[in-house]
Image (cartoon, rainbow, N blue to C red; front, top):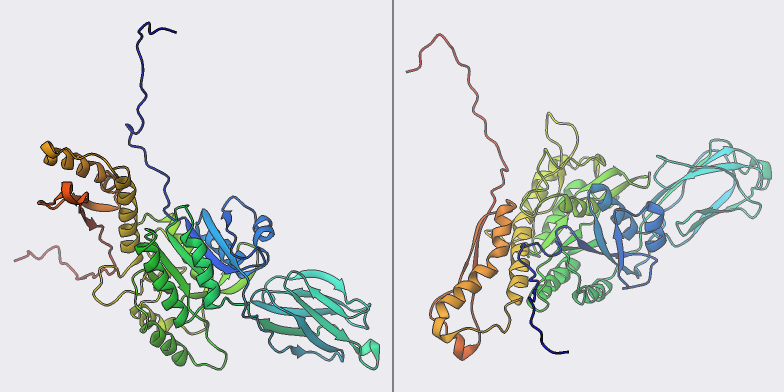
Length: 473
């Protein structure tokens, strides 16, 4: 067909200046689960509890997802691990007069406080019971103890085995109570590092990584080093959130707090956050449990702009928290906060609980003491880099270097202008140092300067009486 001439229309893209996909609040969770090891599973807030359990099992990883969703999270990329350090079963404590023998078998898949109560006495296949996995706050209905004496504690990996007494009818007495605690299986440092190798290859964008479950100084150091590597090698400006251990039964609060502080002081990195906050919380699945606050913290960030503190009292009350744990921790919270742990607190005169500060494990004097500064910086870096990538291998006109470079500067400043409009920063500017030999090196150096939002952390009120009949001097 010949060229008859026509009006040809070219549709340009990008003129509206629409944002690319926003990764704010999207995060990775690494934790013990019955799902396939190191295979990423996407969890989001539209899923029901049963659906999440279908994907991740009855596991610490599931609990962390539920806590985050309850606090405000939307999308999470979950990397399951096996948990090669097995959970432990505590000793059964028995209250009552029944004479049945009892023991627990199996491997717990999570932290539980099991309570089994005899509702009607008698022998095997006669006595009835109910049980709780959250210390008696909620119970699973009345059942008969089977003839073989094995009571499965559904979906916990545990079975309680009973044996009849010499006189079978005296085996169980109404009101008998059996209680015991379990701990969840834990990840080894190697498992976490293997999961982080999966994370480094993700093409999806995310803002931070939550390491689910109690961890120690060695884990914190390994994770911190990995976040540095993710930034320096894989161009991923992210930070990691780890969970401090719980208090041991034979440990005083003084010993517990000092142990945490000593461990924290040996690891410093502004890309690391360590949550020491613990609470008894009303969970999304209807249970009540003693949990580290890592799940809550990672759910609050998606609700907050990157520049906003999740300790803001008006906007971020911790509605699921019933009381702080371990018992008596309140006087030690200032010490833990000063040691740069994330903690929860109460305010005299207000109901409820709040985040004390979103502390980072930064060195003294660092600009990046708080998560809101790290999040703001990471977002600026992430968005500037994406914008700059569109300029890879562009031409620079040697006869109009200044004009071409100014056009380039204005282009990669666009993300900072958007952050100003969104009130995530006060101002931001791109600086291109003069005197660069771009023609000879094919390289250009760029500096970004940002003024962050200020956060009000203390209010001092001066109060006085005033006499309206007395003229001021």
